[in-house]
Length: 401
Image (cartoon, rainbow, N blue to C red; front, side, top):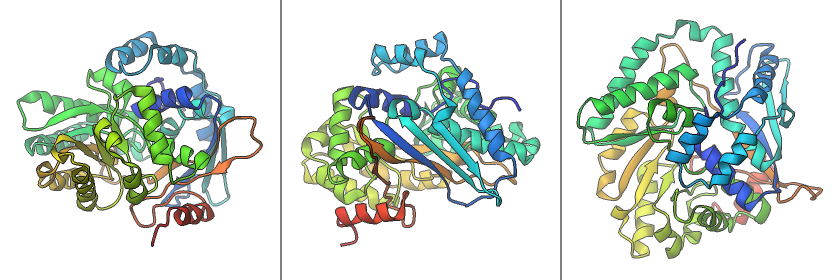
């Protein structure tokens, strides 16, 4: 079977921005990741072997001069040494362990240097998703012309309503071609006339380069989760914001706050951070409720929330974004990151519900033990990590009191 990932930058921008911050601040850190299929899917027998072959093929990937030039031009906040680092980067399949039981359930783990393994997550998730649809024959009946037209109509609705939005759909896309078609449709729609809204770009760096749109992204939960494992969850957000400031000096100023819930983040979100960061990203919980918490926090610090951006990205579809757009501009500058609804919306295909989360970290390879960590969601039942670790972190944060 031909490789699914054939371009080094066929990946989300925030993996590269986090990789840079990790090397800058934690050059010797070691981590572990684990795969979770929230639908507990039974994969076809032999899937693990096919997946291993796909991951082995990543070892042949090399970043091209064109990709380096694009990132230096469009991602000027990345230091020049990052391009040199990526030129020398090589994937190693030994970082990945895959098992499949008799029932077909998958077990996948990564372990290694944080600066290396951080670039695996999105690629492996995209591989799993497309590989499953290939092996089960579901991609054989996909109509990409129809998908283009349906995507274009989504763009018309969003742009007409004044939404500023981007594609966040790499990790659970039906296929590379699906995301490619989606970005083309949204760009074509955006450029067709003057709209109240704007298609701001895509999280996928390669497709941003191909279609000449802006690559979009800052950070993910793993940056805070690893720090929470190494130092404890109480001050993880504070440390993460401080280190992000150290690396980017005010650029990439959207902070993802919900790794350990709103309460502890709010306690760490002091006036200096609130002024420094351009805004916050809502990725779990009730959108209206989370927005009101953000608005109240800014106001308590004497900051007008209308001067701040709030990005909504919690499993949105077009209708969700339109609903939020109906009230959010009264409080903030809203924008939307839409993922699976954009890149995996085909009749008869059920989108996958898969994640890979960082579960343990140690600050240096000389340590003989890891510190376990987890991710706590504002959504009920979506905490990720070992149940005992989740309970320990919740107790440390006095959650539920």
